[in-house]
Length: 374
Image (cartoon, rainbow, N blue to C red; front, side):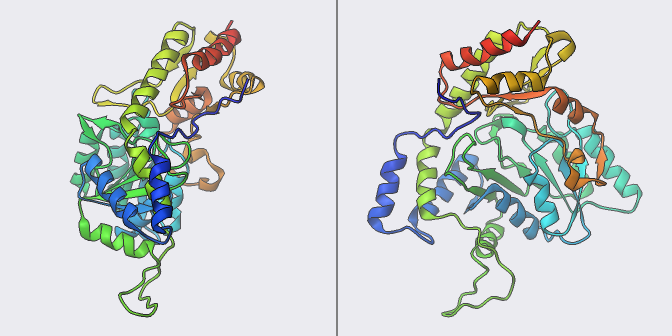
């Protein structure tokens, strides 16, 4: 049987036609009409005023911190349970991350620990310059209390919605709950441009500045004039065309991922020691990845034994994100909480969740998991 990947790209039907149009018009690089259209269509879908198409979600995080003038020695609050890029961008600008643990009911940043972190820092005479809050594995953070806390202490928010395009919080699309929202179109995301990202905001002037910084900070002159340091972060017109095609099938992709989760739940939900990532009552998750935890004492095998059993059958799975405070590169960084993320990492596994998966694919995975159980 062919290898079953964790979350491979899934093209729709219009991407190739749009790319052919780009080639026919010779709008290959550096910019072009598909970039403008992609930005406008994306902003409208999220419900924000402006968007800048970039080379990656990491680039969007970096630029968001630049726009908030975060720099050397500043403190930035950051979700502890996340992919490392959320925290890497903090170090890019010379700032220091302060990690805030998740709660077990949503796997997202705990509002209670966030408040504890801000109050503790305030008692020390310190004030975070920003907060990077992640919408994890396709599920929204609990934005109302998080916004209230950050507003009270004057901490601007960067919403890292890289994994959660198409999810909602209180029926509103994600990416609009901070000063800036960040998305990723990496190959494993729910829609992809092969690589790419988007920075969104209602601050049109800030997004215009992001575009300038992302284009090597060139000034408006007939020659190459630079008054500040810029970056090569712009998305190409070809990839923007792919993104436009992917946007057209986003709702279908979300529906497919949620259906795959429901199949896993049906086929594995009765196994001892197995629990799936909860869906918070305040929102609707995309189920970008179906994530489960396994209690080895009840199940009869631990997360790593299951992963290896799947790999023997040419099926890719992956542990959930290793908490940032456990990463060697962030050794010594401050963390509030940590036990919840540690427990999720020890027990958590991401199952194949690509939107093109069939019922028989899910049954293939599920049979191996059932065989691992006592």
